[in-house]
Amino acid sequence: MIGILAAISAALAVAAGAFGAHAAAGEQQAEWLRTGGLYQLIHAVAAIAIMGVARGPALLLLAGSAIFALTLYAMALGAPRWLGAVTPIGGTLLIGGWLWAAWMYAKA
Image (cartoon, rainbow, N blue to C red; front, side, top):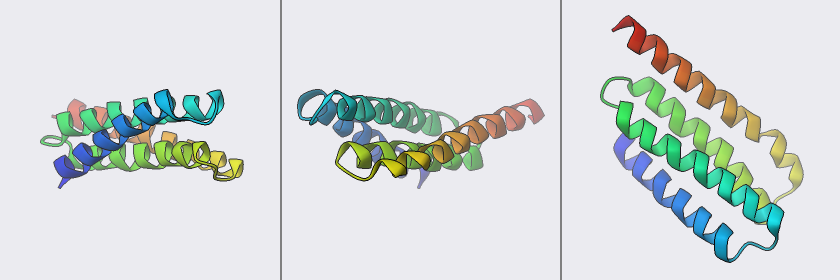
């Protein structure tokens, strides 16, 4: 299941980046789409890379990247800017996923 979610996440990231490059309404919207796409794509690949050894951290990376990126995508598409206050929650989950993975690898 992690692989499926990660692959869908990566596809969404590529689509967001392409939309940002070619159809965003303005520079700020394009930047939100680029940033969200970059973080989402990196963490989708990371989740696939570690899913065999660290399932929990892989899921946390996917959840964090979804919250981080989707809030940016939503704002780029016209959602209220207060949604940007939710974005750091995703970032915090990403940091937690990486630290959890580090702890698991240190134990192994």
